Each structure stands twice: as C-alpha cells, then as structure tokens.
Image 1: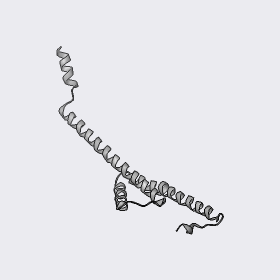
Image 2: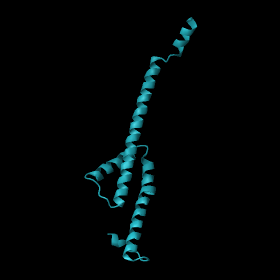
Image 3: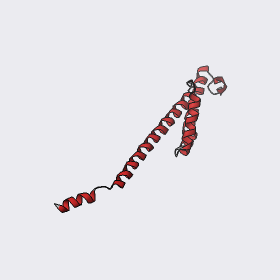
Image 4: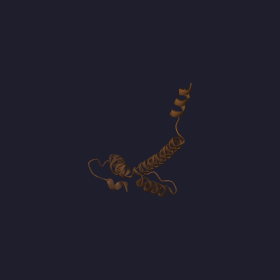
Length: 121
C-alpha cells in the first residue's frame, strides 16, 4: 500500500508543471485566435478583390478596412505568402475575369478577331 501511494505522488505533475501547461494552453488558444483572424482577413480581401474585378461596388469604408487588413497581414508570418498569393494567384484570377469580359463584349458586338478592349472603359 505504501509503494502504491508513493508511486501516485511521484507520477503527479508538480505545481510548476501545471503552470507551464496552462500557459502553453493559453498561448495555443491565442495563436489559434490570431490565425483565425488572419484567415478571416485573408478571405475578405480575396472576396473583395474578386468583386472589384467583377465590377461590383465596395461597401462604405470597405476599401479602408481592406487596406488595413492587408497591412496587418503583411506584418504577420503570413505576409510573404500573402504577397505571393496576391501577385501570382488573385490578380491573375482577376485578369482572367477581365479577359473573359472582353471576349464576351467582342463577340456581342461582332468584333471577333479585333481587339476592342477599350469598349469596356
């Protein structure tokens, strides 16, 4: 009986270990919340950029909010990934949307074979 009691005491975490594990759990929660906020910002920027290429209006003050979101994202560890994504993926997707609109208007106007991209302006 005595050895069983001694084993239980030896396997119990010390108070300092408990403090460390609680701090670690709190840090994990803060990191998850930070990542979730960055992810939401990333998604809102993605949706707004696509909306602009589709000629949809931005809401009141939305451009300012998006600009601040970009600034905050660039300060995080996602900053370099975001820059690369914006340049290589999102803007390319927007240009494809514009190209498809140009082709649509060219065909609708009967100008197939000639570039009438200026008609969109």
